[in-house]
Length: 106
Image 1 (cartoon, rainbow, N blue to C red):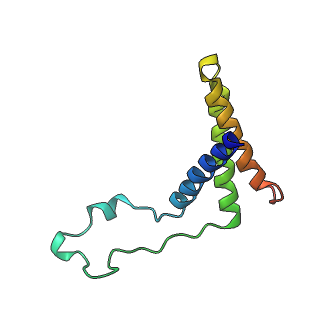
Image 2: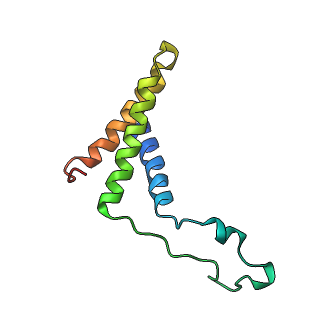
């Protein structure tokens, strides 16, 4: 049971981080060059940017990508020395795919 919980916690943490990254506002190179320091906005919230909101389709796509990535890496781990890591990755993918049960196929 503990190993299964460890797989679920790991999969969910990294997938939540991937969803958080997907909602981040993209920074363009022109914005990075930006304004001179004296022209920069000041004050509370001056540098805050609204985050993007993912649609249900977007969330499903991120979760599918996370599961697919784990299965792909597990398939490449062929040596007996990596059997435990491959099994953990497959378990993590199974956890993520269970969340997609009942979602519309995308």
